[in-house]
Amino acid sequence: MEWRASHILVKDKNLAEKIYKDLRGGKNFSTLAKEFSICPSKSKGGDLGWFGEGQMVREFEDAVKRMSNGALSRVVRTKFGFHIIKKTGQK
Image (cartoon, rainbow, N blue to C red):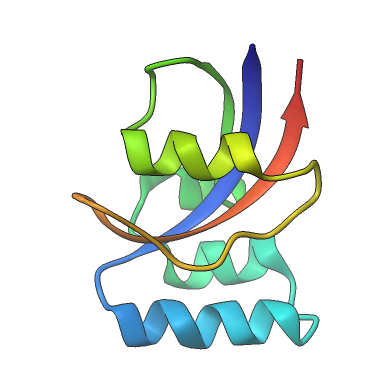
């Protein structure tokens, strides 16, 4: 199984919660990723491309597996910081 996802990664949980609320309110994911994410993927609107089992940290991968395509995750904490994930594909 492979998945595709975009994410916004920040170091501060309160900022992550604010971004999540903005996304739920209709703000554009790619725009917020470019503005706030600390991951190099921010230049692509947070797009991480396709990845398989074991390629992402466990908490991130587990969240993506549970999501349906097009879904937005709540804030997910990993050793890298706080992520808001948007699942964009599965094959």
